[in-house]
Image (cartoon, rainbow, N blue to C red; front, top):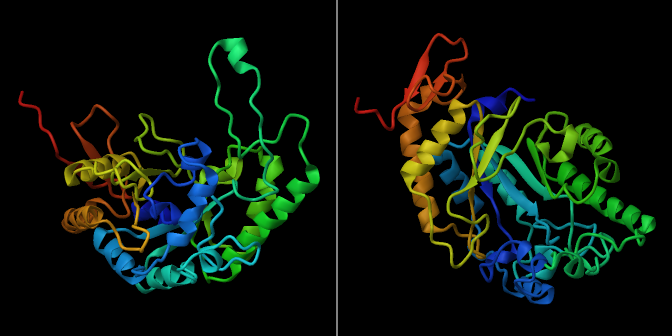
Length: 354
């Protein structure tokens, strides 16, 4: 683990992709049958990134008090945000945007002294060699209820194709080599989609070795299974903090990417309190925003990031470079200690009346 990470406290997550065209759930909308796969992929035709300005993103993230950011370079739908040569499914080759979105993101973050994070999904529900159709079985007759089957992930029983999997892993390795060698320093590999195969099939141990050969100072989230550096609980602060470094990732509203119906943005007070509770338990917070398809950020999310930064700046001493505070029950709120444990910082939100 690099020492900068537990000191950083705040990062920004960006879920950006073709799913913002229609404002529907990223990848899961076709997995669940909410929309047909072909209809989902038609969003490629409407993805313009016409207002994509990562410089303004980075300036906002810096104002918010973040020290790093993580961009979805490829989600489960398989659409890459850079000019991958491993296949043709990228915003460069398949959308009106026709440009690499990763390079300007990296350059903007570096100009604002932010650490560079790449989200990458191990699985790929668009790749022809990833899996065949998993047919429905007789679960309805056996249990009286139809059990949903993922049509995009699992091969038919007895129909695993080792040669197809080998081809997929070559593709997987090629894309990660591109991300590791074409954009300069990578500070964080933020993996996802590890649950559909076991560590041996993905060769997680070998993958980490290869990535570290290219990026020796990078850190890895827990979704390398047993080979990551820090835990990543989602959408709920854990009651008991994980052992070792950890990061609580949470959305500003209720959705990772832009969803047209989601106007349920958390209040500034709620975000500040979640942040204080997280760092008081020794974790970081990775706060997620979902840009529109044109690359501009939702105004409600910009306002909340700016407000978070306004709260952080006068309280920076109690935040950055601190460690977990008092155990639960000893104070009515969150707290942190200075690293030498000589100074205790209390975050006062609600005081008992008696």
